Length: 146
Image (cartoon, rainbow, N blue to C red; front, top):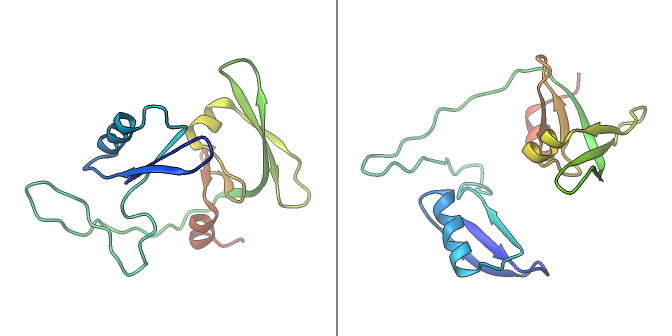
């Protein structure tokens, strides 16, 4: 599912398709001047008892395999993100953690572009050094502070 919005944040239209690309193309065709287009899975926001099943054209759908996480990670909840412009096409993020005793730190352009962190979510570092972002609800549902 996808939605197109104007510059004031008002929804212009919704579209559905087999792939996110189909949805995006439909919205761009109908609203080429949209200020924002949001694309998401049809399964986002389903009640917990609704099990997502993949769409398989020409064949039966079955429940996808489920996994449980037992990883240990380092993480800081994000209180604030300030964008630092380093030129017309490059920006970094100054992330301020909510946890006391931690200073704001710089997240490079690649991190900001790939993960698009949001206030309230978590800046996460895995054992191998990989840095990621996790939305608040997903992180707090899967991890317990040790």
